[in-house]
Amino acid sequence: MDHLDQRLLNEFQQDFPLESRPYAVLGERLGMDEDEVMDRLARLTRGGSISRVGAVFRPHTVGGSTLAAMAVPAHRLEEVAELVNAFGEVNHNYQREHRLNLWFVVTAPTKARVAEVLDEISQSTGLQVLDLPLLEHFHIDLGFDLKWS
Amino acid sequence: MVLNDADHALVSVLAEGLPLVSHPYRAIGSQLGMDEAEVIARIQAMRDAGIIRRFGIIVRHHELGFKANAMSVWSIPDGVVSEIGRRLGDAPEVTLCYRRPPRLPDWPYNLFCMIHGRDRAAVEETIRALVQRFDLAQYPHAVLFSTRRFKQTGARYGRPIPRAAAE
View 1 (cartoon, rainbow over the protein chains, first blue to last red):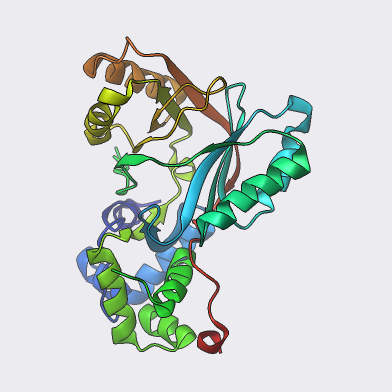
View 2 (view 1 turned 60 degrees about the vertical axis):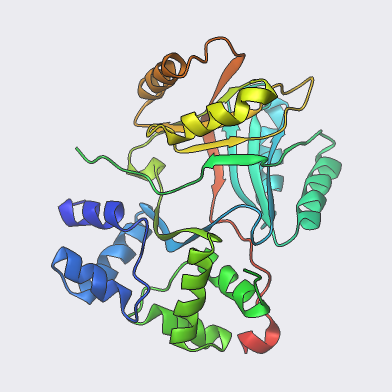
């Protein structure tokens, strides 16, 4: 990854241009042409550094979401994680160091669907699912200074 | 701002990401039966209304060397949790900060902060510094490092694209 890749990743996490040819605008700022910007973004996406060029929505404005936690017996962790992953509504799913060892985020067009997903997971695993909906947010994903050294 | 059906369809598409083509807004529009200017105007309106919190390149921290991530949680009395949350949320080391309900007896914690770092020691040091700076040692606290990522994709808030618009 060279300096231009690093600048692409760090400088356009917010305020991506809403203009007809946004990649050409990025190119002007970085001193390269539109095709090179698209090539670099494609390569960084393939390599896993970029998830997408897109939007992060404020919670509870376009649907429902929640954070859920489960205490899964160690020998069932993979099986349960796979079952949780199979829901398209689950967009993050992590094992964490705690008795509550599986943590995942459910997002759906309606709050009713979020509740339904939690129910279905609880029913099919026979395990309790803690529902921890957002009550107040103090800082939500404004991008991330990668502090390249 | 009230979202109409076209906005919901646009939300679905934006959650997937912009295509890497010269005129991405035009490409999205042709999928949804909108013209380029309309797509841009609706994204701008959602951004102005705060519905879109951020619009840009979404990076994957783990792949960029931020190998450690911890969810740091505290149990803080209701009367002061919002004030402490606001102060913690403003700290540059904190990548996300929010309040959620405790669920007794299993889960007494109501304030959550995400901390990302290049390694575990760096994250631990960051948390130590936050506890000191914001006088948090008095509150019950737990740190949940992630040990395995089973899934990480964009949130899919959007409703399915209406058939008429998709065709």
